[in-house]
Length: 563
Image (cartoon, rainbow, N blue to C red; front, side):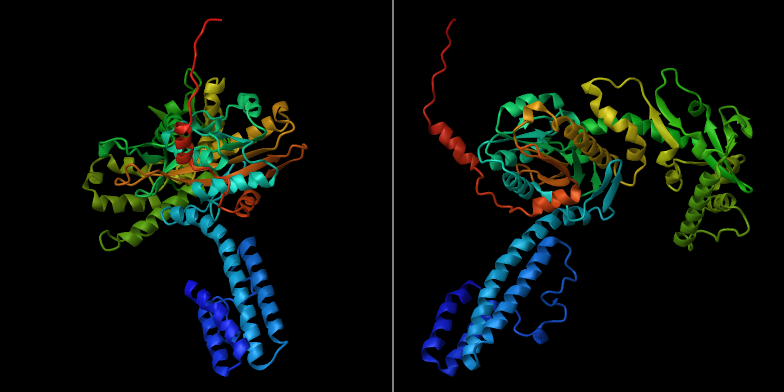
């Protein structure tokens, strides 16, 4: 394209002066080479897979629609201009206009596609490795991850340019971060320093909780203010799971992986333990037309300190069943299941039976017909496990624990909750945020650490907006609160020394201008505002040059004296 641009002026001027037909043909060839497929001279020559300009099918964002509109307008102007002449002059004029159109379109296409490319980059990165991740339903709304994530090297300059668009000034804007103290949050912090020109103030506690009592000092240090709130979660591309991260500073490869975020994982762990133990102590079986539920005494009995996992019996047991067990055993009681829970159990057992029939047709005998799911499964298991033929083993096998993979999902988040002791003070803020949502975190379709990070993100944005909207120290200042989740892509074993890759998943934003006008931008609006900005920041500083300049300057002496 660069070579074609070099011959374009000559090729277009020669025919106008000399008028020979051969030069007109040369001009046609030169411009056709220069266009290189950017603009088609006839729709009939366009490949069927290429959409006609102006046709918005397949376009899914405002940038591509704007590109299509500009394409149609420019192309129409070129064709209209060529109609003023005839013969070779029309061809030259039309081709000139089309060449200029192509130049404009190339720029428009670059500007329109760059946002979509950057936006989709993060999505592809995770969706290829975690294909089930599309959107996450959470207490304060659904979080969409399709075409919303972006790398920090694109997010921060876009955020800076957006802040300038709402009235913030270069060199007078002080960012503040609500990040966890983990070392893998350093790269995002460095990029904030680069693009905002100053090291950020900090609002963050462990886990991404915000210290809302720091608004005053933050506001006193700048004319305009930005708060970036982002809990974080690790992602390991090799295992395609959230919640772990490779620490390359650890020499032993067997001990390089640890939890990420560690504060969140440490908080979840005891609740996860209670949850897993509870699943093993709840057993079900079919009995004629009924489904029976066996609950061990330690589930039924409240602990002395009132802390533990509690069942919502009305979701699992038939009405009045808790007071009228069908049987009492040495370490528990047996109850009749509710209709809804019984249906879920039957469906799960039927699905397991179909899976066994599909996957083990050649290895296992045909499942007996005319028997209950439980009886059929017992016979199928006996054929593969001689131990089930021992006395008493069949009765044990008829009871199925909810801890088994086939039955885990019948124990839904509506069936239990956690009761805790007092959770007071800022030290318990993260636990107060997550414990009420712990059934959703543990029972959800995604990794608990990812669910927890997103729930914390939503909760902290909600809490922060209510605290800053009428905060006196921010009056008369432009203020932006940007909320999302930092996704730390675990480095490979051979990437020691390189910066970690961090993605930003936007959630919502709050804007308050110096004149008092305020607005909350939901996820789609926030992403749209970011993508409307250029990923280039002409105000970005060169950190190395800044350090060298500091070292070259004469340093003042520090003197100590008695007052």
